[in-house]
Length: 420
Image (cartoon, rainbow, N blue to C red; front, side, top):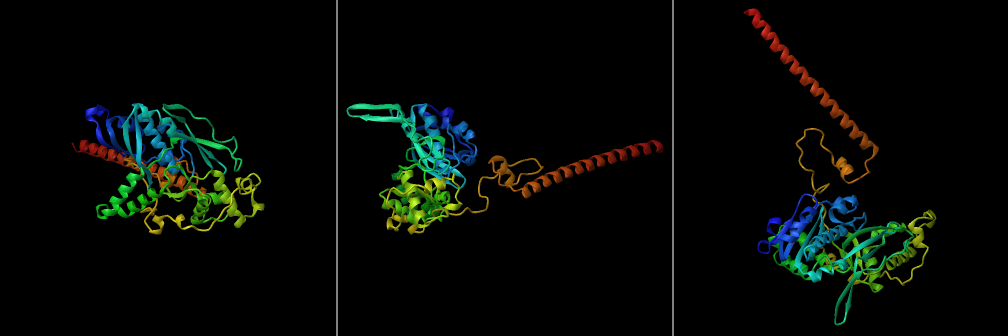
């Protein structure tokens, strides 16, 4: 790609699909693509992008990842931030037209354009994420600020903040800071609509047209200007209440005058332009209809702090027809199951004949998983010792065989001398 950076040699389309991260190739790709050209980028290092190794994420993408329920959408926005940052160095910028989190990877399609004036807007498109470790509330802090003035060019400055206090206003918890991430829309709605129409008009052209139709339909229903999302079951889990149905939760937000949608990254996710305060007011109203045993709650738990406050808005859980998305009404294949157990990228081929890692061992080593029980650990240690013992026995047999062979040759030499 570096050999084709000149204007006449640039490519119309560049597709990056490496094993793992695409970060080392972004700098060359944003230089080698034509103005208005298409970049297709895939990253499969989801353990890094989803917060298991935030320090590695910062080294690769220049952003801190967080272990949250919205980690897959945040992974998309981290990669888009990294692409934009690479393009800005050469007076270029990106326009995402489609971004996906499917199976075990994220896949982005972006247009690349050249404009030094538009690059000045880039800081206002990036944001830090403040995530409460107690109630999972999140806030975005833009990196830059643009002030539009009448009959004058816009004024660019650093943003003011932070958007939160030292303690969370809902539960009193502290905040983790992630990002920067791409805070603008990750899809182009017109492009998604045209693509969806094409898939529906020519279903026989694609072997996975049913799944494509379902995923694109969900994407077309997403709120484009609402970064990140909530997970209804997780909200209920925080206050230890029975789970509210998504239809009722979406209806409550609509009754309160806010917009709401689903998202393709999770079947339980909710996107809305309502604030964290409104979301937790709805959960408080739900708890009043379905009381929890507050005697079992710890005084220092987020649930106790949240439920001590009274709802500040009137909440109605009556189901509204527009709370049920069309993709659900049509029973489209929106969130299909994995085709097999432990679906994901397999380990690279190894030439060694020694012990091959099991899936549990690989997860413990690469993803920092600590869920392996003592019984499994003992079995792993026993397997390792048995294999070491087999190696020792096989070496001893080989040495004995070589020694017997040398002895036989020596006896034959002695016999030959005697016969002579």
